[in-house]
Length: 254
Image (cartoon, rainbow, N blue to C red; front, side):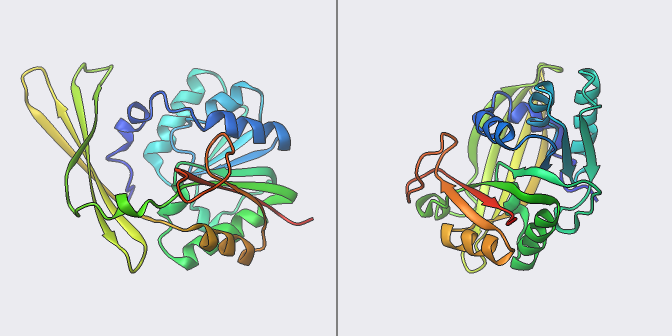
């Protein structure tokens, strides 16, 4: 079953204009060169601009609905020759190629909810990197004050307009925290309001396991990586307790 099928039609619109991480990824692509691996590549938000710059990439995505949208976007720009899309689970990744850089952005690594799942994904990523290759993980830095918001509270996050139908889309979210397991259970609610005021509601529940800096570094080291740096922003600012992001750069020895 494709857990992301319900949200896939809204994914690109929800992230429209979101490119604050692109410059960072471009810098590491320039540093490492092709071939490059993206884990959790979605609908190709980063694959497309990187392919336009001439990089050769593989995008790994578990959701067939997301992959279908990525394929359409690549075909529309005739970029299929530079990008290989693969429907696989990063925990059991098995590809023929080895890469100079792997990256996983926008909290995608946090969809792995157990220690075993996280270590399995890191191990498979390590095996798919060339000696000296880099892994970039982009996660949010847990803000305890936000995490402890009243559970189940439905919050309006944004209002969008569907460019195809002209309908107004209202995106809400609700959170419930399991502090013992460090898991945040989230539900997105998308209300599609047509011209007559009729509402079609889509629910998208998912869970994220948040990590703290020391925990993340221990995971990477246990998996065989050398931690090169941990940054607090896409501008590579020093990581602090107040940083919004937690961006780890780790190297495969060799």
